[in-house]
Amino acid sequence: MAAGLLVVLSGPSGVGKGTVCERLRLYRPSLQISLSMTTRPPRPGELAGRNYDFTTPARFKELISRDAFLEWAVVYGHYYGTPREAVEKNLALGRELLLEIDVQGALQVRRRMAEAVLIFLAPPSMEALCERITGRATEEAVHIKRRLQAAQQEMAAYHHYDYLVVNDQVEKAAASINAIIEAEKCRISRGVKPPGWGGEKKGDLSFD
Ligand code: 5GP
Image 1 (cartoon, rainbow, N blue to C red):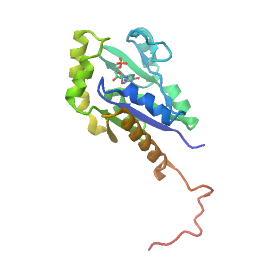
Image 2: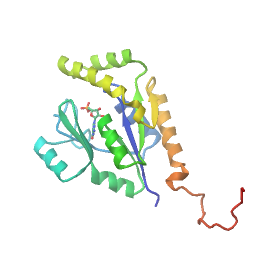
Image 3: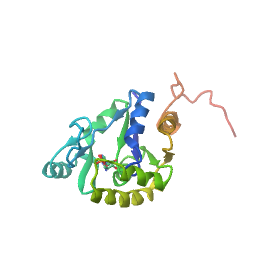
Image 4: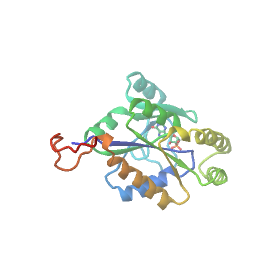
C-alpha cells in the first residue's frame, strides 16, 4: 500500500483555517483531520474529542516526557500537541492526514518528516485579519491584543512553507489546497509508478 500524505496547514489566528478545512473535506471526504491535544479550556460549543482532546498540564507534560507527540508548542500560554501514534497509524494505512497547527509545530514536523507538505494560509490583507480577530465574540480584550501580536509574528514565517494560499474566498482557498494535494499525490519522488509497472529496466529508452 502506498504511504499516506501528511499535510500541515498553518496561518495566523483568525485567517479562517477551520472554515477552509471544512470546505476542503467536501472535496476530499476521506481526508483525516488530526485531533490535537490541548490544555486550553474548551470554548462554548466546543466538544472534547471533536475539536480537541482537552487535558491537564500535568498529563500533557507526562506525554511530552514519553515522546508521545510528533510536535507540540505553547500557544497563547497553553500547550497544544499532535499525538504521534495517530499520525503514524494513518500514514501507514495510506491515508491523507491534515494537521491544523501553529508555525512552531509546523517547523517541528518539517524537521521530523521531510516529506510533509506545508501550506500557509494567509489573509487577503492585514486589515482584514485585524477585523477578524477583533470581531471574535468569544475573546476578551487582553486575548485579542495577544492574538494580533502573534498574528504578525506568524505571518513572518510564511517563507518556511512549501505553498502559500490566500484566503480571500473560502471556496477558492479550499480548491487551491485540494489542487496542491492532488499534485503532491502525483509526485514521482513520493514513489508513484505507472499502473502495472514492475520497475523493470529492459526497454528503457536511451537518451544519450
Ligand atoms: P485555538 O485555541 O484558537 O483553537 O488555536 C490556537 C492555535 O493553536 C492555532 O494557531 C492552531 O492552529 C494551533 N494549534 C491547534 N492545535 C495544535 C497542535 O496540535 N499543535 C500546534 N503546534 N498548534 C496547534
